[in-house]
Image (tube, rainbow, N blue to C red; front, side):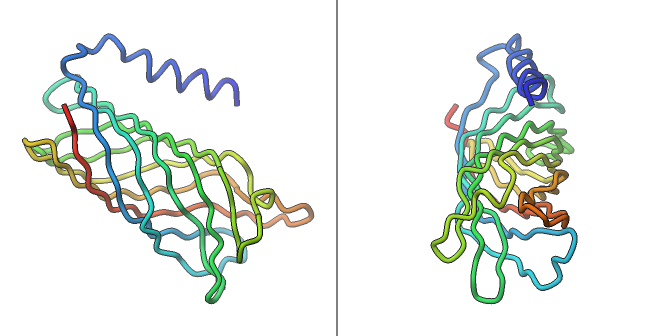
Length: 185
């Protein structure tokens, strides 16, 4: 864990030699279509959450390549019939972006998520899930000249989030996100 945090810090701060005038800062908000996949998840259904928001920075290296770190609050989880298991994460995606044409980009990168809370019918279930989640993101984005930007991204969980003693089933997050945002400068 310490090595991963060190690597993340070096990645973010290692790009600090990018000209500060070229860094774009903004915010975004979106909708999550979340579920989990893995062992014995056939009876679990996806959930739709109107909560996915945070801050973004884009650091261009050329006309075609950019680095985009983000800090995002995200409600994820799944449903069992009518009941929802809501898992609230603070996610740190580290996205590499390649511009196919002016404004249109493809993006990919790792993500680390920290579980803030977990609820099932007003019962705290945070201890049933691991605190740290790792995933890989793939997506598309479009940025207008005025700073408005749109995105669609899929977060494929790589780590087992199940933390229930005696249960060897492996569960992983799977989240489709659709967002809109604005770069302030």
